[in-house]
Length: 228
Image (tube, rainbow, N blue to C red):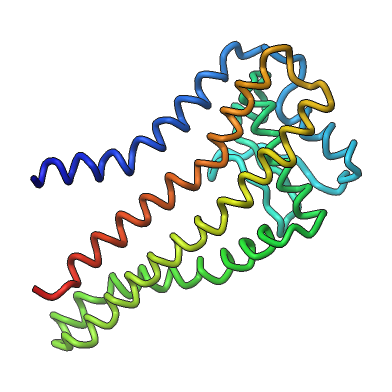
């Protein structure tokens, strides 16, 4: 029974991540499918939409994202410099977030504020979990240690909330912003629309994988805390 449970947990954690990675890698080939890079398309779309104040940057960490506080589209090296279908589609997805920001799209604003608050709360939660053994063993305060642990686990749950709030924002950026930009502007080669939809779905579901990992972590800690 325990092996079945572990297999289910492993599937919940790794299958979404595997699918997203597989889709992204598949359409990175051929690497020269488009005449311009992802960064060039992002810059062109932003200028065309009157968002010339939004910058486009290459980033080696954190992955592709739009930063509302800095007003910058950040692309990974493969998507910033690449000319593949994945590169141009992901670039359009991140431009979609910049359009949301310019339009005052409420879910993006809520997510941004939640991330600012809950990121600090999660850091405090990690510290609480780290201090729990000190309180319980070194200081001999078991009740204080348990309180620290409960508050730390609650901070893990806050991350799940952020990812759930993120989902509608991601699907809106993919299918109400990026896909119309790509198709109406004739930026996609014939036959690529269907594949671009898969990439845009994968871009949105990146956060599903993260939320599932957070949910499994939260469930694991709840089992530890459950009496008996």
